[in-house]
Length: 277
Figure 1 (cartoon, rainbow, N blue to C red):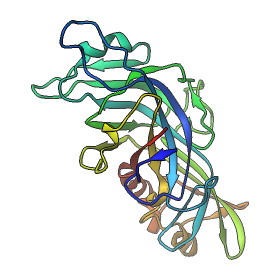
Figure 2 (figure 1 turned 90 degrees about the vertical axis):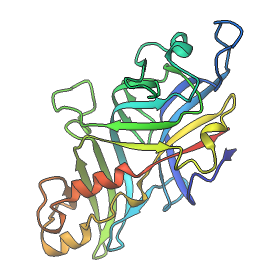
Figure 3 (figure 1 turned 90 degrees about the horizontal axis):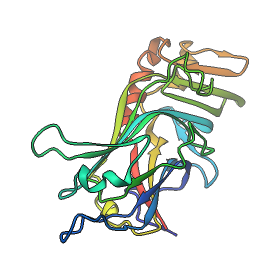
């Protein structure tokens, strides 16, 4: 069963990709220093869209052309989760290890935060992660804010799939133009973060976690192509189709010269959360 409305109507979401064991929310024992057994929940990363179906993720460009995603990878640099008031790194230090760290706030009044360190390449459609991080454990609390930081994987980092090397986000998607099926290859390289915080959590989903739940971090692709005028650029000749494939990256000119910048801005606004139980 899925709880919460996720901030907007949601017709399709695919996910898994990032699954992390977590200890369910709670604070330390006031009577002694022993840490409680909080139970466990999972953390998942998924792609979602207001378009498509349960097994198909779609999005549109400003001219109304529909793109059906067939492959989608994201390069995660770090996931930061701000600990709630009254909880600090000392309370959770025995519950983190390996790629998971807890950083104390540098300024007075600044929250301590849990960090899941990258690089991590995530296939949002199949659930594959490189490296495999399924064994990680982190505390699950009513986090004040969640930051998903992304940055490109270097070309020479051969421990990662060739498909995502050199990019932050790479997407393949099928579309039709002039009644002919074509494939879009979107390749974008940028350093940014998508945030989800208290101002967006109108339903209090971050406060509703229970033992056995999964907290789902969802990248909503619905608006990723807002102001990315792929159809118009094809009509103007700024984009070319070679053997049925159209490549969009930071080398495109004309109306699509800022395609990567527009995509990055849309990406920054796309993080949502949900709970499944």
